[in-house]
Length: 146
Image 1 (tube, rainbow, N blue to C red):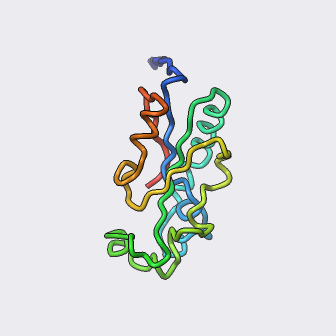
Image 2 (spheres, rainbow, N blue to C red):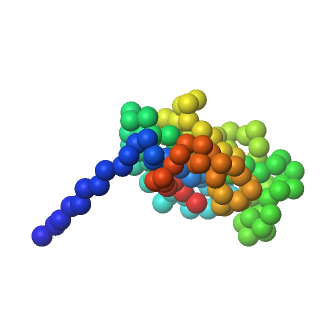
Image 3 (cartoon, rainbow, N blue to C red):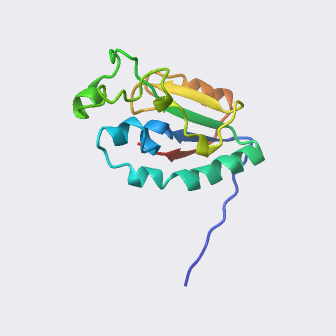
């Protein structure tokens, strides 16, 4: 026997964070695949996240897309460059590149918020907390990759 629970989100107090759904992680031409990493499991997230993005656009729920971005000289790459050899050679996550852009299949639009970060954590050394307070967020939904 299956039971299904229903809950209601207050769209005026909910924000969705879409984490690192970038060309680097989701496209075969992206730097992660080019560096030899298996991205097959990451690519499976595109359709369900797109459904969520569409629902947010329809209901007015704010979307924050995080983007992992590293300076072209990798001065701010930190330990990620040490743990994943070949990233710099693959041009991974370099500022200003196609690699860092949100995958177009997600349907992000100019009214969405885009937050660059240079660490895994979206809160570390970013203004994410300030944005969430400004949006009066009480419920946070997080989806994405990495």
